[in-house]
Amino acid sequence: MNQLRFTCLLVYAIAALFLTSCGEGRKKADTTTDIDSNTANVTPVANTTTTVPLSMMLATHKVANFAKWKISYDEHDSLRLVNQIHSYIIGRALNDSNIVLVGVKVDDMAKAKTFANEPSLKKAMQKGGVLGAPSFSFVTVTFRDTGAVDTDIRSRATFQVKDWDTWKKSFEEGNQQRLENGISVRAYGHDVDDNHKVVVVTAIKDTAKANAYWKSDLLKNRMAAAGVIGEPERFVYRLTHRY
Image 1 (cartoon, rainbow, N blue to C red):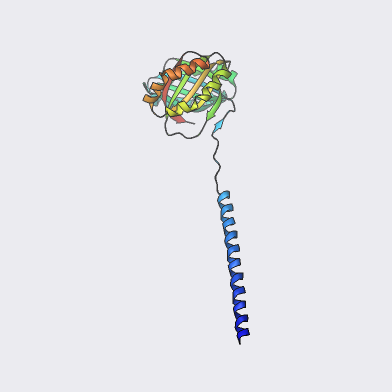
Image 2 (cartoon, one colour; image 1 turned 60 degrees about the horizontal axis):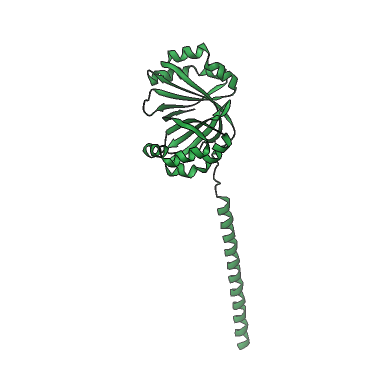
């Protein structure tokens, strides 16, 4: 009788040990599955910057009435496409909403330069209510950030530098300072024929803070060290249309 009781207890002990071992094994397997699943679901951060060169033509001019000019601009899209020119952005100056900045992408820079001087373009501009002579610039954009930002205010700065590479290195090193002052770089590049003529476009979160930074000795010293010649010409505008 004692032997039978001992045998039963031994069987129960072995069974309990077996079940406990299986439970631990199943728990480990489940944990491994969870880790693998979490790893697989991690979404990589998208890179929104590019250094692939982009050819652009920028035009700045004043209009009598923006709404009427915009209708005329859209009506002449076929004229631009024939010349391998594609609408990209439109902005309006903060201090005068009838001063317009137009940025277009260019497939053939030679055609774009010819197009800018064509009588048909001048006629179309006059029809749209453009006042005075427009200002054109032809740019090779070497850096762009296409990521979303929570402001539609932009600044375009144009200036000359002694050496492009020296300026570029110093400019990139100053990125943290700009961010601390509510300024983020959207694009920069240079004149298509002269990399001493630089163009920088930034997004502005706080115009008062940005203006204070632009006037600061900190920025003046950085520009001097980067080889900037003279004072940058700034055009602050609101981005109103993207194509």
